[in-house]
Picture: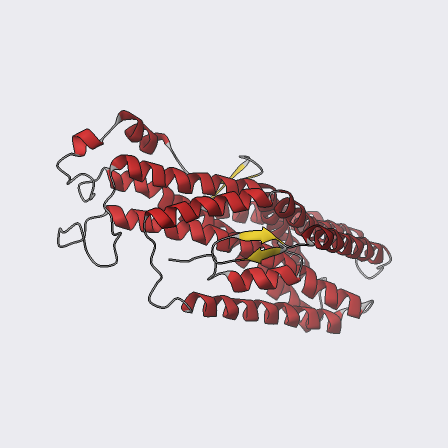
Length: 364
């Protein structure tokens, strides 16, 4: 099962770009001693870069007015994502710590054991960081090569801002993975093995009553709601930003406005990155919610370890049954405006296709 110390490499690298200025311990995170000062400095840095970037676009006479407008909106969205995450994670750091406290309660109650290969996840995290930094370095270098004006500035901002945005998104995904692993562990503990025995190797040391399962599930649900509330605004901005980036960059490629092969390569790389980010957001949210809602279904199936108990009828209570039947866990963007799951990808794809047709028709 993934622990906070396993995803520490991601949080360390994110801190270099101003994403969550936390000190990471084995099972908790806390704001750095001068976290307030660092957060303000990073926020001012990104605001300055945003103003400079938009100011330079005003004097760019090599692109048409429509493409200029799309580029300005795209730039503003990217910086809005970065700044909103810095502000929200700083202001609501206490919610993240409270969510991790709920996870610690779950781990102590279920007597969490370290996996057989505890360092494997950390190696994967370091590898993910290396691939991500390499990818955005390549994008920044291509930007430096193809931009006719302010090539150094544009190359650096493309690499730094996109890396920061991706690290913020990965931080949310890593925190969500902590929730997913514990929901999955709770589901596995409720299922009878194929041989019909209740106690087998690699299962929980203790068999819980229905009320205890209810309590454990509510701990994880509360942690999920806290994490979701911290990242609610960012989720909306990430989805809108990635969708708009994908739309406008596909439009510029299909419109024939790009003639340089390297520039086409950069746009394709950026489209692939935006699509990947959308997949990460929707998949981790969908998987975590599915595992959370699976607990109640498993608890009352014939293969449930709870149902086979002789005292199940005394163990069962109306409140617990009602809770599992009515409690549904989902991730939402902007406090309930958009539910984030796999069907959302179809809506995004159909929306992008529709607007591409509209933009293409307007050019004819």
